[in-house]
Image 1 (cartoon, helix red, strand yellow):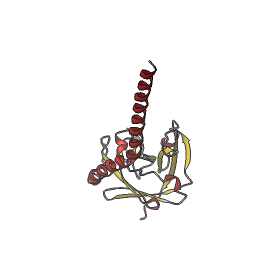
Image 2: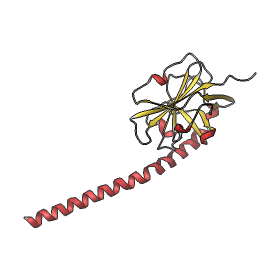
Image 3: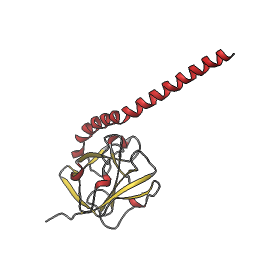
Image 4: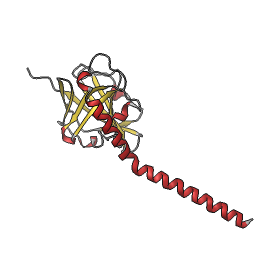
Length: 192
């Protein structure tokens, strides 16, 4: 009986070790695999952006390009913030304003997977430039203040605003969905 228990315990330990090994391997390759997926998706979406930007854009379809020069970020933003839409890296909150319009253009992005376009969002500061473009339309926004943190269920930051602004949201801290890191920027009026 004791020998039987020892054999069962050895098998159980081997099974646990195998499960832990597989979990560790997945943890190591998850980010690189999602990055490869996101790069391929971004290549396909890039060709769609000039045609995008009409009144109705299907969920998951290319909407615009987002550039953050200080961080070296260039990403195609799709319509929607569902799990599948955000596999593109960044998504436009449905119902929020479109670039250049009065109101709040709200965009969510990944921080640790799917290309991690918002990985270093916390490094932005007052006066940093963010550019949204689609086709020939180009809108410049300047960051108002340092990034700040809100609760994961605090939707007030993506609500409509009376003046044209941009709000970027991402998970905080990195690797956790416990909170949201938020950056807000004001539209720079086009020069005549």
